[in-house]
Length: 500
Ligand code: HEM
Image (cartoon, rainbow, N blue to C red; front, side, top):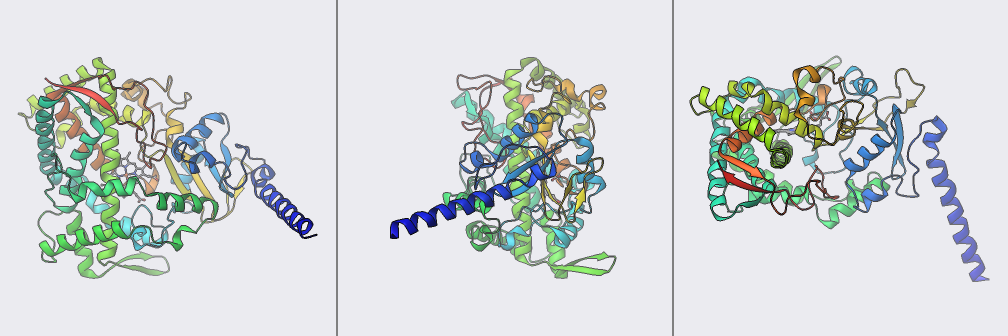
């Protein structure tokens, strides 16, 4: 009898679960939006949850599979989300109807560190963006050039010493040293000496952020199935302590006053002195408190967004140069000409006189979009123009930047590395919102110009002095780490480096 009751109970639960998932997973078919078939519990993100592939490469696959569709319905766990494929509709989401899609909707942490420019939403984001934009003007960038050049000199000296001992090198760890040194110097006024064999605390932090522990990874997966659960656990105390201590020590060193460096920390110290940052809006004024934790949160995002993405892009560029010697020679010639014109020292203006390197950089970000998914969340019910698809308030919206970059509709032979995709004639034929390595609209990458200038100066210095070739460990087709948050290879990027 007891067995019968148990069996009926299990059968009842299974039936209830079946109808629950069936109802949940009929959301898109009821709206006539097609998409991949979901599995119970995990929806379409099973392989991502099992860490067999990264979210950005999965979403890219979906983007490419549904050729001809403007919108694709997917499920993150049991939660419906929409993938926008069509550049015209993407333009609406990112630019024209920005007031509805201002939020990124990705913050899953209760830590105050998530009140950073990347993770924050609503009024907090608006105030932060307004207050932090002045750090990234061309004027500020120009002032930072001597600091960046100092880092690129240390970088080439370091590589010079290194190749005396060995010729085969993992290039990603080398470019990370350079970009870490740059961000340490330009954002925090720190002379880190990361471009050395020493490992300091500053250079170990990214490993904790970009290679989260099993505990954090499990919470991320659970959060896809039960949205909101991650907020209930503390996941970032070590990283939080590191940045709060870093910020406090820089403030202490500057005696609580802005220095003459006019860097990111100076600006944050100015805001901290006022105690609050505010924004005038139609129905009054909104305010946020600027304390050490708020500064630490911004430092964290500048640090992570600032160095990891640029290091990755530079390493992919160097990889492609090892495989494309003719392109490499053209870069070397162009760089040498500019160095000669500027008497051996690059300037801000000189970065605009390397159009071929610029094309190569754009093509690198096309073939390897390091931050491949753009996220938004609808703040109201929204009907996509020209369609009868309406999404409700709160719906997650995804755009696959690297799916668009690999779409033959916009880039012929997308697997081939071809800088001519960005020649002046070809560039103007790329539809708006079909190429967005830095995102688009008012919530695009605030560090875009900084990223370009630091990468161009570092790459120019590198190719002036060195030549790269494939080594025995070079992989023509790179394999990616399924656990990577930004695009990272599974086995590093290996090249042979020799002196010019
Ligand atoms: C090659 C280098 C870089 C790439 C490919 C990149 C890419 C991106 C992308 C795709 C976004 C999202 C944009 C969107 O949703 O529309 C973003 C946002 C952001 N990036 Fe970058 N980025 C790079 C370098 C940097 C640097 C150097 C910094 C700072 C020093 C930075 C700081 C940020 C911040 C703070 C945001 C959030 C902006 C906001 O929400 O208002 N990034 N980046």
